[in-house]
Image (cartoon, rainbow, N blue to C red; front, side, top):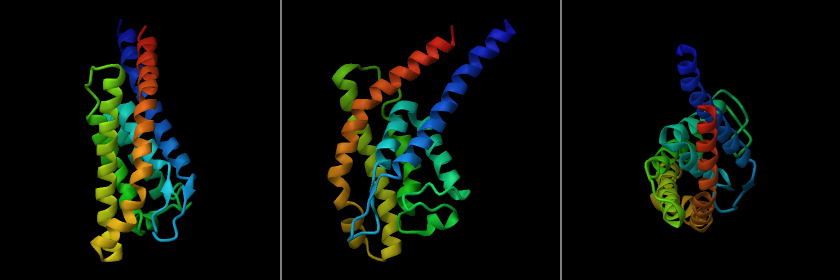
Length: 195
């Protein structure tokens, strides 16, 4: 009985750990899909999609933990940023605020859908709204740091937010559509593990 209880407690934690590692790796992988823009130091990447998915699929704490793991790997020197660099210096550059913003963005996105019981299109719509909230968090944190670097709030807004609005809306739509499958897979695996 004691052994069964330990296994039933450990398996969901192992599954959660695998999910956290997966989304940290997904964020690192999507950093490689980069489109530099000549008028801003901030590139277009698919990382926002990975951040939103981490919150939508893993929930607030799991999503934030996956992004902390990603940032920790960069801080430790792994060349996983969009610029292909690693180490503490990455967090002094113009895009540092966006990277740091991934953690609260994943948390907020996950918190807004964690206890939602609706299904179908209502769940997808709520996931989209949660994704938009996550994007706003990334913009707020990223633009704030960019304003410090550029010493101009107006330039930070025009260079760090406006060029990305359309692309990030599309990422929020994709995340809302895809997240349902990820949640289903995790719920299915968790129930299988507990048998």
